[in-house]
Length: 170
Image 1 (cartoon, rainbow, N blue to C red):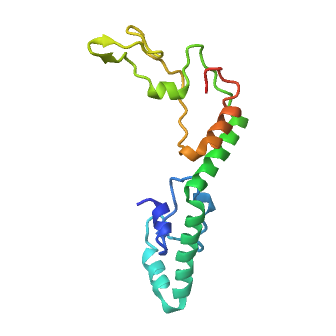
Image 2 (image 1 turned 135 degrees about the vertical axis):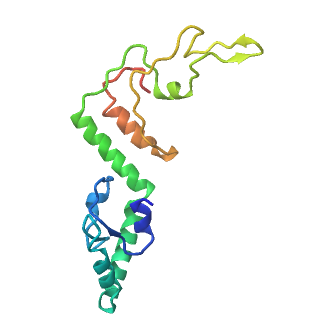
Image 3 (image 1 turned 45 degrees about the horizontal axis):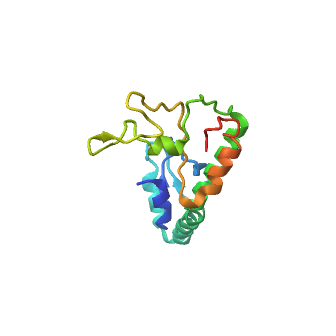
């Protein structure tokens, strides 16, 4: 089960040091949002005994509540959109704009187009993106997870990082 869902439960999360990081891990603090044990989990038993002790019951409850509150505030669709927005901003500052060939298609067309012409009643229906002997080629594909309400995020990407791309990018 992903850490996100564990944090949302409201219980104390006990974890070894995280080897693989998601975008939000750096914002979590040991003793505030979770309890860290050593890599081999040899300290897990004593950590659990301490968390279950009457003296630390309130502290354990506070850690669980703090983690849950933080997750409810930051691990939302809007939180993920904020992360992607910032990532696109940083990418536009550090990476060269993609250069597309004159044959490049807008992403929407490439995703919706058939690589082969459609057949109806035994005949071939003309298709603006493909002909019987030509397959559609995609130079590069950047997929940004979006929702219908994310049009401003996609538009920002088009106006910044993709601004110097081919005029076929839409």
